[in-house]
Length: 476
Ligand code: ASP
Ligand code: MG
Image (cartoon, rainbow, N blue to C red):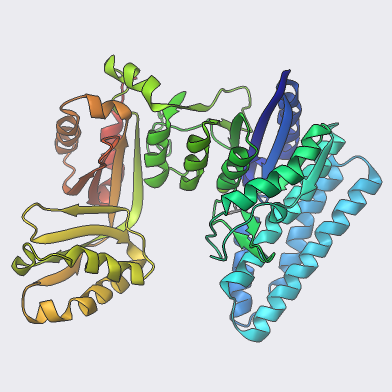
């Protein structure tokens, strides 16, 4: 055993989503205990539960309470059947079921209140969404104890302190550090495995917040960085980070190693491997990160490594392009006009208008002629963004300094990622010839300044062809 080494392990929804998954998770924690004397477990809600909770809240806010009894029995069945199979001790099992039942009752009460009010505030939605993790943490804690791992369920609302930006809260690292150490270190000192809720935190005043959908990864990174831990392992349902989506390219492979900057680009550009905010805290704290598969635990998964180590491997001519991703359902919006030339502040006003619609922009390109600015937004926000731009530039449009603001049909953003690209001339050329040879037309291009990624915008219906073509550039 590595004396005094600390490991944070996060289990995603599918990794705690069934009796079999929970069994694997318990065995994985047991095995990790042989290697690390101090282990903290962070868990998501059982798969599908957060969606169920938020759907019910949305319906309730529209005045509908019809599905509440079905929701109640669904949640009870999901959690109770797992407890029945995996928690051997009867009194422990009864306690856990009672606590989960109380949470389900509080959920129903919240939904009824929303139905009466006819609205669901972001704050109320966070309280509803938190219930998934608050149930799963109790279940997993009991399952671990039953499997012989001394553990205790703790709600992260006690120590992950955030601002009041509901549904996308930001941690207060100073307060979180202090409280996390005060609460988790004594348990770890006693050899107990704390099992805590991913995804949620609380404000200084104690109001429950969430870190954004998929935020449990981020929770693990926050907790790992403040403890601090030596390693953070993210347990999911695939063998780590793949070269691309295997549903598009069946011979996609697991990447044994990936650098922090590559995974940051991948997470940003649509590979659903990690919540994009996860990377920052672990990089800053110099903590190791690994992504592995609960359903194939002997597979080593993907290790994140410092950038320098890989740059040399890249120079050996290998792995220049490492992975390809696609973000779908985007539209390109273009602002164009000869009068924009050299006028300062056009971009600032344009993005100010976009920000006012609360839309995030994954890609921007500007031609050097300064006669157009072009960027992508999610399709569902595109019309609102165009309207906002037309309002903010009403004057310039009237004066014909701006000719028009327009949007395309649905497009996809295809991104190739690899640190080796920044050391290798001609990569962009190879990327574009590969697309050209496969008759994929490119509407717009953006290259990250770090040169770790190149993104191309293509028509929605050409996305799969583009991914397949570019995946061929990956050296097998
Ligand atoms: N349960 C939350 C969600 O579904 C958080 C997570 O799974 O990471 O978004
Ligand atoms: Mg997740």
